[in-house]
Image 1 (cartoon, rainbow, N blue to C red):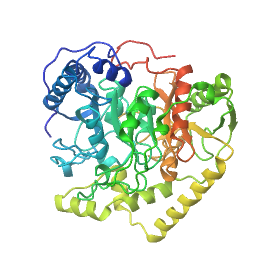
Image 2 (cartoon, helix red, strand yellow):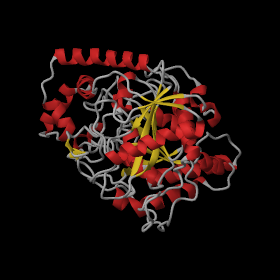
Image 3 (tube, rainbow, N blue to C red):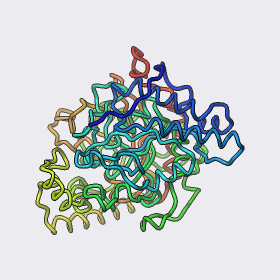
Image 4 (cartoon, helix red, strand yellow):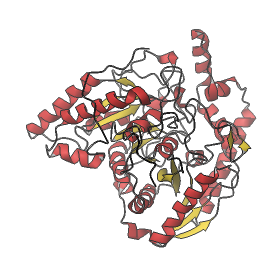
Length: 496
């Protein structure tokens, strides 16, 4: 497959001068920096690091520079521009981009070029953002890692021998390495939050319906690209909570193209002052009663949760909702939402065989009874969460059971000395997809060997602003944006 296009540029050193989406947009709007120079710097950083990290699978350098020149021209003429004018952004390769190759991480769509933008891409462009390329994903987004049969596996900027997580693997790697301040991911079972945790970023999926989907992960014209309609979300990966709130303000809002999209609510993206967290009730569970969790991850998550009580006076209780392990129900619902017949037919026509999680899903003969049982289990889980969160404003857990592991694996062979299946390291994230509640991964610290660890904060139905406020409060006492991975600063010791 052809490599992304490159224009030679001098290699940058160190982290970018302005990692903040918010600050960069403001600087460009004030003409303190030009959009062209900003995009040039982003492309140079990609040139320098992406030969190692493989965050991008398709680049559009020339188009990005032309779009940046157009933004500078509008600013020079005094014409109005959007809130993200001139800011370089990256788009996960599951989301449709007009006239830009979109492979879904599969050889079956190696040369596919959509004829329309996903609605979220359309909105980013309307806000003035500059799309500089597509980021790597697992095949059709199946699997919480970052390798596929099309491109070299994405790698973690904190240690390129490790996975960045997935399936929004390239998006997380691109933001963590300072290539872009914002990248879009999609999240059907944790695919934004998982790589955010493993790469030391903030990643959030909003309440189901806040950010519309069309056609992107639901393009029913293409088998396999139709996504998981009842589980899928699109959202940002950023280096700060404020940057994510700014992105959501651009991305969210209704459209007749998505019958599930919710009415606009600008208050959903308003971050309240940290003092409003006093007396907030947090339930912390290190394992939800069924997960196997690495001891170091467990300790880091517990200490992070305790800081809410120490700093903000939050009421912390170790508690978990009365729910079963949702994994089997989640997998059945994924199968139900998947165009299995279309994928099987397409693969048969091309003489192609799927591997990994997707292969297992397609090879299994699911029964109607299994699908019915999964739908009923989902209802029980949603009802249990509702009852539980009458006594807790937020549920806090680790985001994943382990920190990053070797690239190319689906999951570790064991956790805390216990043999595990490939999906056992991500037991926490699918819960919020099943219920549609807002959930975010917040950087919580580092293992003794310097691998990032995240905590997940899950809010009540439609309480997106609450999740952002909790995350922003934690950010004030445990800031993470200043920590840069070793790929940018070789030889730097692990953060404290």
